[in-house]
Image 1 (cartoon, helix red, strand yellow):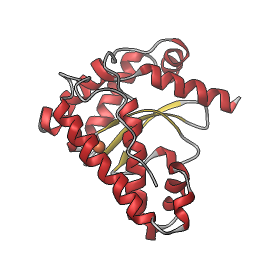
Image 2 (cartoon, protein in one colour):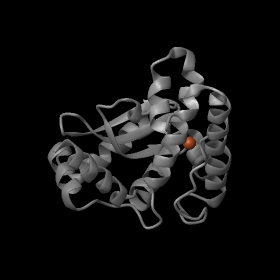
Image 3 (cartoon, helix red, strand yellow):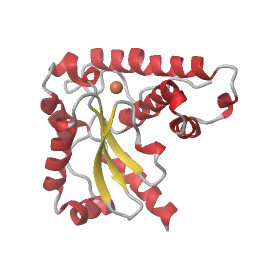
Length: 205
Ligand code: FE
């Protein structure tokens, strides 16, 4: 039985960049529906015993379990997305993650430009992620629909932005790049990304 993880802040906390109305629908309706559907699909099966990441990886192996994969991955993706934002977020990181971004992208500005271009250019629904690869290098990857780097044990997700239309349509209509500017300049939670980076580094050492 999976529960809807609570938002890490109030529904009004990201205003004016993301409205309470958007968060109310996105968390209270969309995210909740993925939880309810996942619970329905695993009820009475051995899959009930798995934690969420185990369930996603198990479902990813079996094309017959595509619906389960989609819903379970969306529980995880949304929880990670909420944590990737903070009320006083945005701007540039500092510390070890900032140094690594400089090494792997040339500069923070180049990282920002590339992240925005990839997120804006992703066709249709999905996510744009900052990940740490098995080679120890940072990369920006996009995934379609519910696809998630957590299904791939070689990639450690550090940060994500949701680019499904339900993320920005009420506030920005079709202007995904305007939503991405708000995300990067006012919302991105670099402390969360830095903590994920530090944990991944510690595990690899
Ligand atoms: Fe979403």
